[in-house]
Picture 1 (cartoon, one colour):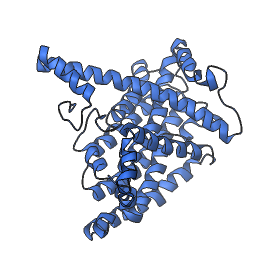
Picture 2 (cartoon, one colour):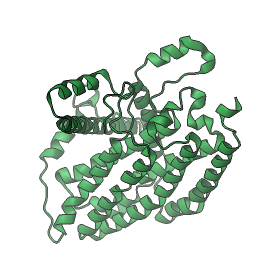
Picture 3 (cartoon, one colour):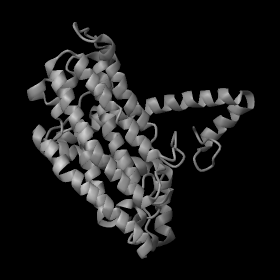
Picture 4 (cartoon, one colour):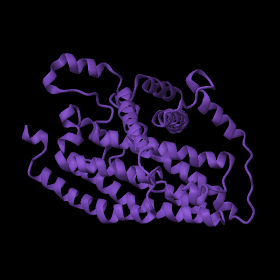
Length: 371
């Protein structure tokens, strides 16, 4: 539930809304209204961030390819993504014969629902977290895995061989790399001693306390493996085999059009943001500012004056940029290369790395314990 009456988790606005509703409504009605309000805010943020990411990728891709990118609709092409959104909302949905209609129309909602459930648990800043489970890391792993159900349903129900092959590739890829992503996150859980995202963030107050640095080499290895695994889970190049245009037309969503295709498109971009947001939260201090204990109160006060959500989105944007850099640098892998990378290299390294992190924690070799 929302921790609206906690001064740490609630902003002044949320506290005021909670008190105003509580004075005139039954507690159950207050909870229901607050849930609806939070849902609307999350849906709005979901759409806005997706539009921003679409524009950012186009501009960054143009930079890498020595092009201009969007530059006609609005100043610097800023309204291009909004124009595309309006266009896809107005597009006709083409009804396909010989499909399993129920599963075909259900699949996009699985994909967007899993993405939304994960998105809602991210701590965007101090007091900007809709829900804070004490098993937050486990929750993120669990609900993010639901998206593959929608992909498999889309491929199977389309009655299209290209869609089916794309769905099978995506299933093999997602399930394989989900193991490495989970082990990488468990490495951080061992280091921080908690699965609760707020506790993990609060334990990274200073730069030296960031899990990426505090956990030494095992934390660095887990960070790199998580970024690779997360990138593979989002089906983006060089891991975009499920949507390989030269082989499978558009992969598992070949038969989708209009808003149905828009759901898949939207979820893909938000999943990229979610992977970067989780990495920023568990490895890079989340919404904590860059503070160095040796620099004194002056520097740290200036850093702390910057709003916490700015720090979160800044760190996340940096990791998104790395993801786009990788996408437009490396060529697409073959399916055998992709699975070999996971099962023969990354997974064994990850399992050994988890054991190393247990040793680091047991023998007190973290930076906090050493200094």
